[in-house]
Amino acid sequence: MNNTRRLLLASSLALACLASGTATAADKIPVTASFSILGDLARVVGGERVTITTLVGPDQDAHTFEPKPTDAKAILNTRLLLTNGLGFEPWANKLAKSAGYKGETVVASKGVKARRRVEEAEAKGHGGHGDHEEADPHAWQNPNNVVIYVRNIAVGLSKVDPSGAAIYQGNAEAYVKELQTLDAWAQAQFAAIPTAKRKVITSHDAFGYFAAHYQIKFLAPQGVNTEAEPSAKQVAQLIKQIQREKIRAVFVENMSNPKLIDQLSKDAGATVGASLYADALSAPDQPGATYLHMMRHNVTQLAAGMKLN
Image (cartoon, rainbow, N blue to C red; front, side):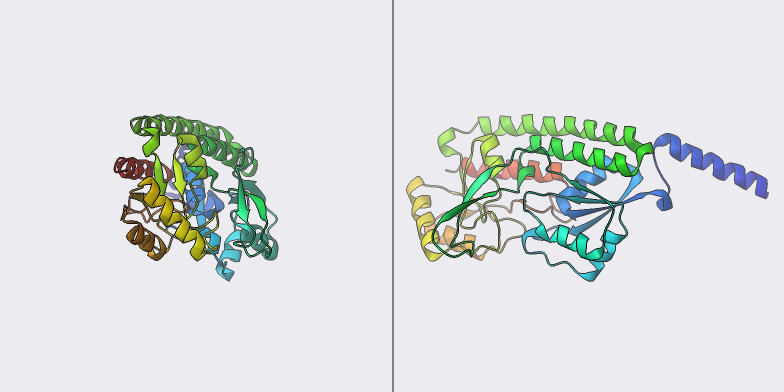
């Protein structure tokens, strides 16, 4: 093949890529997501036009994450930084600032109606015995909020890559339909369970949005932040409540230490069910590898557990 034919072939391939909305590796938009769930949403919306770096990976806890120098480098090399907001990963903005990042940042939860949760000040290490309110950051536990997430991501990608705006918008809206299908299916699963049986014990309070949306009562020995250790009094009170209400649906989360919840279930006479995915996706070979898979797994396990109550 002579040089002229090679050039024509290369030009044809480039035009085909542009026409199909794909990009070569060198042309792809580098995107950095603070944690695995956001990384998955960015992959769906960005499609073939983006490369995704996730700072807090599968089965890791963003609450206790400590950035490394390589994370600062990843942010410097990105064109779009995605964070959850609502106080979920305060280290992300600090990392971006210390790295000197000047690019576009999207707070995925922008526009979400945040739940307010009362925390005991003493348990949160603030001293004193009063209470204070804080936002519950786990907004992705309601699929309707993820609709807002993906649309925000599409807007952010369109800002850094205007030529792909129509593709990002199309990908986002196609995913919105999948989220609506997921929500309708989940509603049907829980509708078959009497309200009195919709009670669950989890290892930390990450399911507030899920609970409110699907009318389920979640009890947890830890607060919203997994760094907050429950007191002996709190654990004893929870055990009494489990026994009083005859709760059998007890679950740990994939990024949590199971010792506490195992002890709770032993003392209260309940059985620990399969792991739930709360703040992180699973490894690719596990049932929570994507947001949609994560939610379907959680709904299935929770519905099965509540039927034992």
